[in-house]
Length: 69
Image (cartoon, rainbow, N blue to C red):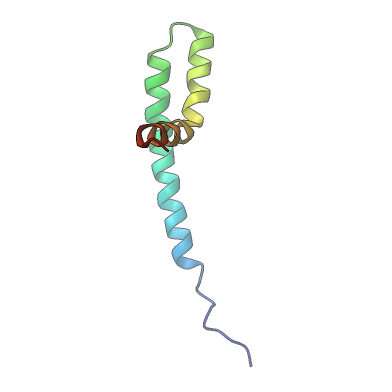
C-alpha cells in the first residue's frame, strides 16, 4: 500500500518561494534605482546595477556589523 499523506508537502514551500522572489524583485528594482541614480558615469552605473543584484549580501553584512557579530 502506498502512503499518500505526503503528496501535498511541497504546496506551502512554493508559496514561500514566490513571496521571497517578489520581495527580492522589488528590492532589486529599488536598489538599482538607488545605485544607478547615485552613479556619476556609465561604469559607475554598471557597477551600481551589479551591486543591486547582490543587495541582500550588503544588507546581511551591515546587519551583522551593526550587531557586532
